Image 1 (spheres, helix red, strand yellow):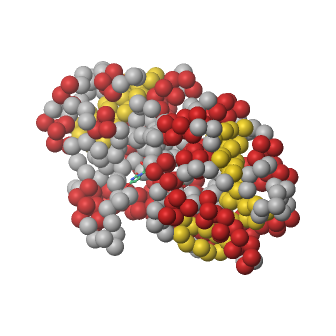
Image 2 (image 1 turned 180 degrees about the vertical axis):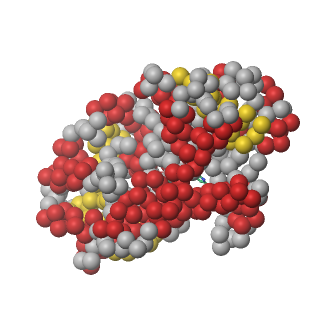
Image 3 (image 1 turned 90 degrees about the vertical axis):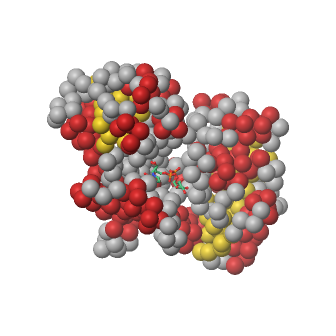
Length: 435
Ligand code: UGA
C-alpha cells in the first residue's frame, strides 16, 4: 500500500521505516529540511538501536523516501500523523503541530477512487479526534485514532511487534468499518503474528495512551516514594521492589527506584493529562500532581546528596556525571533527570564534567559550554564525587578499583551498581533508597 507518515521524529521516522520494512511504499514528510536530507540519505538523525540498518535498507530498496513537500503524499491511501505534542506553557499539550499537519495534509487527500484514511498516532488530549473528524470527512477522508506505545531504545521492536494495536474509530458505522479494514491491511504482518487488536471509540483510544503512560509514571513514583521511606528507615528499596514485584498482580517492571522518569513522554503526558482533567472539571482527581511532585523531588535529592557528600559546599569542586540521556541506549536528553541534576550542581558552583556514550557527542556539538569527557574513566579522573545518572552497561560494568578520582564517593542515581563491590574498593556509596 502507499502510505505517508507526517512528522519524522522518533515516532514518525521509526514508523515510516517499519511500514516500509513490512512491504509498503512509504513517504515520510517533515518540515525540517536537514532531517529530511539525512533520512533521505538513509542516515538516522538520532541514536536508536536497529533503526539505522532498517532505514538504510528500505531507502536503498526504493520503498522509503522523505520529503518536505506535502504534494508528495497525494497518491497515498493511508496518512499517519506522527508529529509531536510538546508541553504548552500551562502544562497542557500544544496542538500546533497536529493542527498544522492536518491543515497541510487535507488539501491533498480524497482525490483517488479508493477510500483514504488519516491515522492519528500523536499523543493528544482526550476529545481531539472527535473535534477533528468533520474536517477530515469534509476533505474526503476517514479519521481513525491509533495511539503509539513504542519505547525509545526499543522503538523498532515495539513498532513491528507491539503488545497490542488500539484503533479508535468513528461513531459512524460505515466509516468505522472502512477505516478498520484499511488499517488491518496496513498492519497485516503485525496482526498475522497474533498481536491483539482492540477496537473502541475515539475518546477511549486517546485515553488508553495517556492512562498507560500515567500508570507507568505512577509505578515509578510509587517506588520512589518507597525509596524516600526506605532512606528514612534504613530499609532497602531494591529488595522491597523485588519482593513486592513477585506478586504477579503487581509485577516487577517499572519498579526501579532512582532519580525518576524523564524523556519526551512520561513527564509531558502526565502534566498534559492533569491539565486535561482540570479542563474537564475533574480537578479533584489530583493524583497526578503527587506523581509529578515525587518525580521532581528525586532530581533535587540526588543533587542534595552530592552537596552533602562534599560537606555542604560544591564550589569549584570537580563532579563527574555519568550519563546525560534520559535512559540508556538513546541520545535523547529531553527532560533528562541527569541534565537537571548537572544544572543544579553547576548553579551551586560545581565544576561539572559529563560523559555519555551516545548523548555525549551530541552535547559536544550543541553545548560547547559543557565539559564533556569521552569516557567514564576520563570524567572520574580527579573528580571529588561521581554521580551515575544513566544506567548504560559501560557504567554498570566499571571496575571501581581501576578509577582515579580525587574523592571516592559515588552516588548511584539508578541503583545500578553493586554497593558492596564499590565499598570493597574503598568508595563511599550512596544509593536511592538503599545504602
Ligand atoms: C514511554 C512509554 O514507556 C512508552 O510505552 C510510550 O509509548 C512512550 O513513553 C511514548 O509515549 O511515546 P519512553 O519515554 O521511551 O517510553 O521511556 P520509558 O522506557 O518509559 O522510560 C521513561 C523514564 O522512566 C526513563 O527516564 C527511565 O529511566 C525511567 N524509569 C523507567 C525509571 O526511573 N524506573 C523504572 O523502573 C523504569
